[in-house]
Length: 132
Image 1 (cartoon, rainbow, N blue to C red):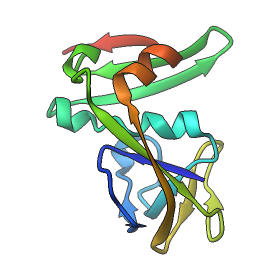
Image 2: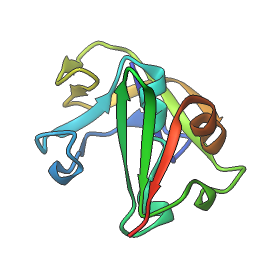
Image 3: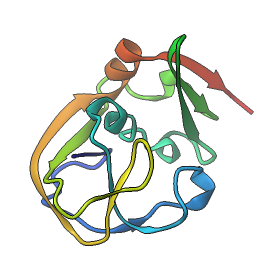
């Protein structure tokens, strides 16, 4: 399992609430993860770091993988900005939907890996920007 963040150095991931307004959950509290490292790395985007009203949306279809940045631009992310993917044991996680798993208890980090967020996005996705 994988969990990504813009915060590095964590040894234990504590349960957090994923806000319903984000459109990804029913408001449950837990450690959120996925079994797809590429999807996980998207969550290294803490859009609020770049814009108070920032957000992002992912669309995967036959045309490819499109990430839409809302209220901030790719250029707002510093070129040297690193995010972190955490490797986790799958024990205790339950599947919530196609991409997400939830563990309601704290989860020990097995391994941490830093990655350049901007480079990752450019290499793997078609990027759209919506500024309002």
